[in-house]
Length: 361
Image (cartoon, rainbow, N blue to C red; front, top):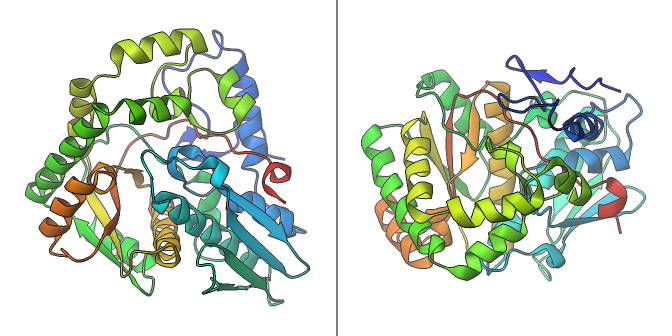
């Protein structure tokens, strides 16, 4: 098992972050230990349960982890966990099925590495589950396997550096998926145009009490809260101070304001090297799963290159703004699926995941 500080990438601990005071928060040591356990590399005899553990490290909205897994002899089925819907920000479960695609990709990469290549099937009579039939083969490390424990959504300002052209090509190549298009924008004029739509969407959400209430439900202000639930958005993972839950509730009401959030997103976009937009050919769960697989490989490739990424999905979460965004993209009859900024920044603490026992049915 890896030690607490042995999971390193780009010179930073997997759970270390400037501003986190371990002396003030002894439970951060426990948080750090738990992260190391959850993200330890797979042992040489890894089996289906361990492949599922790696699947749960995938990207997902609000860290709601809206998935369940059913195991058969040579098959793993990934199902939506509708009890973990985020019905205000994601009323048609778009983000939920993108998350299932992300988990699918992690599982396939891990299984392939250990000589269990998988074939996926999304039944036409449901379009909502992913069946993965595992075969026997030769152990061969998948190209993005090493990045799985280190991938994270880095919700901070980046440092403004531009990404090399060769790295941009690697990102696009990794994201290739039948039925999914990926557009990369690096021109500051294009970033400003997208930023306007981010701000418009964010302002709409910030003035929606239901959106605020749902977001608040998934916030975890202290390490104790994060470890108790093993889900949600831990403050430290966004670069925010860790505080007792009662104080976090009070501070959230006082500081989570429209102008401050819009200013934050301006800094986030303007400090980014670029923005990636993912567009599936069809507007249905089967294609949203494909979008998730495409994005997960993009995020893993970015991780391998030392490039951070984070979603800025406001332009696709507000229907009126989404229509304007589609028109700006020149895909008026197609739904844009994901908006992701990327660039360079130190790592932030990583988010918790529920145990395999909690997600297997």
